[in-house]
Length: 276
Image 1 (tube, rainbow, N blue to C red):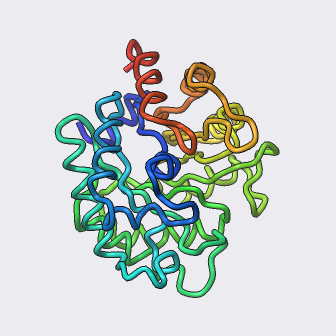
Image 2: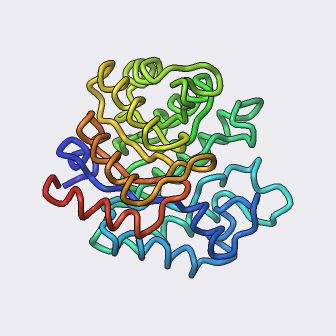
Image 3: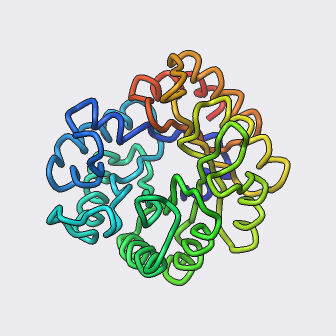
């Protein structure tokens, strides 16, 4: 079964946070997590394997913030990181999980600028050539950047599924004012395979975003909310209880972003086991 088919069958359990988990293991605050793909590959592999063992059926590659704008002065190259990160995720996944490629906004402020389209294109071309199971554009703040990313992906991805996620505040608006419904409509029109939300302020906000998306579109919905960070952390039990409501509201893929751990995903997989 392809990941596209698995999303249609849903709900499917995604992995949890990478950045906050690597920080807990020593990644300096403010350092792009993607750098540890080269500098600490064993730690990246260990985390991915823990998520697979916990029951995640999709592992995201450690390529968030791998665009050139994040690597200045690091001595690391975007293509080198992508190649190594995909290999690491595949080693960790084995036959247990799909490997989806994480792609961030192309600039540090998440609001685009000169060269954005080219930077997206370079990453998508590399990932498609490596045959990942899906490309997941995450934590987008600008609908203009979403359009740039999807247009670039569509030129090179072939049949590789494309998921695009924005992050929304408690007012259900992205940084540029975009509403969940607007994101869904743009993605429908541009040919993306799924619409999503990640890294919002907690699972309750993600629930409201998913409800809005489900009213607006028939596209599969992907959700990876934070564990209430930074202002109002929630326990694993509280996170999972809301995650179950998120799947009932229409999400076909559910995992976690900042603050979630392999323990969170283990509890989530157990809770959803009778529905997968």
